[in-house]
Length: 397
Image (cartoon, rainbow, N blue to C red; front, side, top):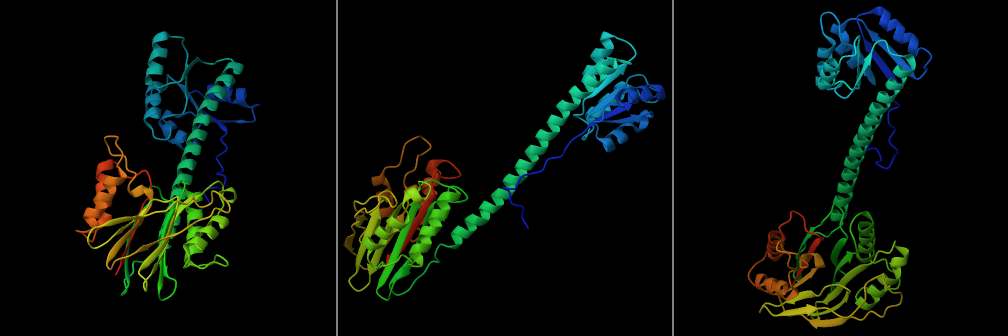
């Protein structure tokens, strides 16, 4: 089961660990006694320099006290080994020397040491330096842990968002074709969770409903509102509403989804009903871009009327409009993300240019949506558009 990314991550509780490497037992015992009263300091001693690296990797000290003059392996060499070791490369090293020599100090710092003490130092000074270096290293470990936890949490969150995005897409309708209508669509969100949704269905044997809504913003909040609004339309659960009447539908949606009740989120919406007997579309564009009705001769009609956004004003008097539909006309319903495109030269695509593009492609292609998307992606010059790309095509036979 995937861990909830919102759960608090428990970070390790690090303790000060001192690791002394010195071939003289008397030095080890002296340092042990210096630290004996410090209950928060854990002391480890290694007399054999050949075992220093292995032992240090097992202990994982917060500071290493390294003697310079030893048999078999010189202390300066061990300093270099520590710095080359994956686990020990950041552990602070305090070099212990019997002499106060500038050249030796310089060599020690060049090899990777953090500090230099002439042994044996004063107890108070030694403890102060141990605490100082250990605190800095522990802070580093805690930052690394916090970063790793954040990366893990972000990956888990990204996985959950991906699942949510897949779920939102699964709610969109399957393409359909019967003797009266044929549909096609593309939905390409600008983020994992987009604010667009759309659908269509037969209300009865004569009336076919088509709708697309665009919630302001992106992310989880917008996606949740979009899915909820889509469900209300698809399931026709709005009370006392004739879904063949766009006025009633959008008015009821406006009352049900007031932005003051939904974290100041609102949406634009296009809702239309095609009557196959009269070949008329009744429609409302509530703050939404005009849908394009393109007949077989290539004539374009913009289906748009003057209505406010959904959720912006209680009791707004939404009014629908009717349009006559020729046989085999194509209706394109879309969000503003398909035409509000900033090209890589900084210019914006004009609405008239977009309509001309669609008019040309609608008369010469069955893949208008893909052709449009490929074009705007090329002209935009980015891998992802700034807004959701949502377009629904309905051929009214």
